[in-house]
Length: 206
Length: 205
Image 1 (cartoon, each protein chain N blue to C red):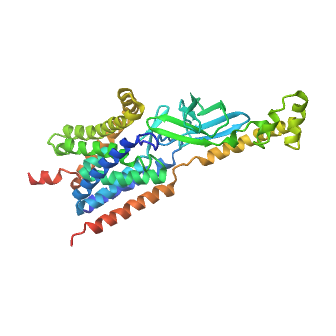
Image 2 (tube, chains in turn yellow, purple):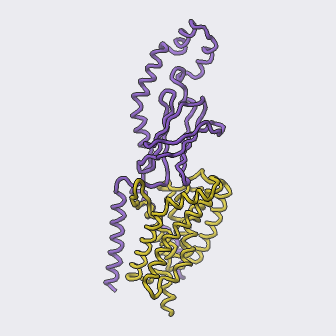
Image 3 (cartoon, chains in turn purple, blue):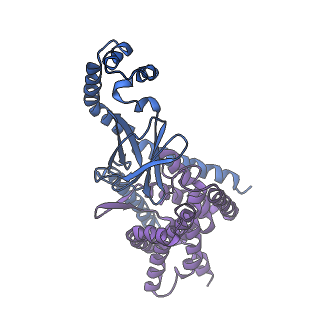
């Protein structure tokens, strides 16, 4: 879902860059010392996740992992994803430097939204609720990224609904896979390293 | 506590193995970036479009623009990711590939590349030649422009095109930029470095 150079118009690129800069500023401000290592690890995971391809019928899709990054980092997902996308653009020519802002927003904004929506549910009493929340986080973060990508493309390819339908339909398999991967990661982390999960301290306070 | 550390360690080891293995899996397809390569054979322009992993771009939209940015023709690639067209005019063309969902690549084709077989070698020479339309002059004129008679000239062009086709294909393949392990490791190194920088500036004094 990386948008290449030369596709988007100037105003879209500019507003994308402005939003990304604002998000990154908030993220860096909220990033405290204890979170830096975690942010780095997740940035690295995001960076290589796009190389993991899942074969599906005639084509294949790759992992995005923005849901997991958002869930574990909150606002710090912005700088983490910005760094990973910049490196992907430089090393793999995925996306591009001019579209870096737009791509950051379309990956990181859904991640932050999902963090606020689902992180309070991670230590819910009933395990099915936790699983559902983690799955929804992975699923919706990709879905919302598709919606934002369509909004960005709308100004060049005109019809929003047809573009949105196409982008979202093409990513349905990856949404399901992301949901499952995110759910597995959350279950694993809860058993092994619960302090990595966001609502942990809140639970301790109870 | 030690047990927990071990489990965390095994988790990362498993992930590292998965990453390395998935990296070497053949036939993976990243719909991220597209490669386009075009060359001229006779008066036909051949275009080849591929994804970075070597998969062909099927039904990608091709637009051919002239030097003023006006669209001359368009079409779709076939199942092999190929597209061919007769050059509509002598101009610096730009061939644009749009593979949908924000994927785009272009390839510039200069005027010199496009010159048709008979008059390619000396673009300026044919100008006076066309002003002499008599059949007798036509027979001798190409000979004057180049040391070889017209027939042989064209035959050589044709033979060269044929011989060079595999070379052009090879070039097209070489131009494809694939993801390399060094790039992946380099990127991870950068991230670790940035973590260090962030830790330095956020340190508790």
